[in-house]
Amino acid sequence: MSKWIDVNQELPPYGVPVLLKGNGVTQHVTYVLDGDPRCPDWFEPYHFHRDYDIKISWNKAQAWQLLPE
Image 1 (tube, rainbow, N blue to C red):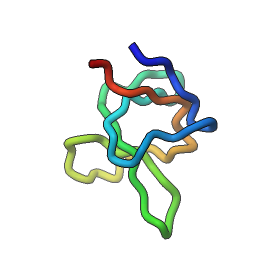
Image 2: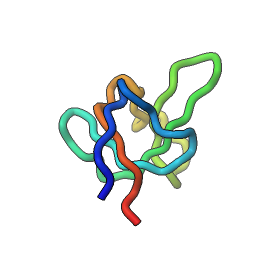
Image 3: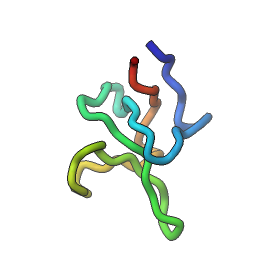
Image 4: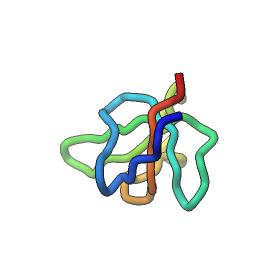
């Protein structure tokens, strides 16, 4: 399994599915980093319709890792 990477050290590439840890909990949904040049980046669920109630601002996340093979 991959090691956890602190979001303050490095963010994942845009659009790459990752596991996300926030508030001390590993999320049960695969997230991708998304964003817009006019606003801050965020993580949103992968393969979900855009539901902005469950997106997570990058600075609210603690760590991420690539999906296991």
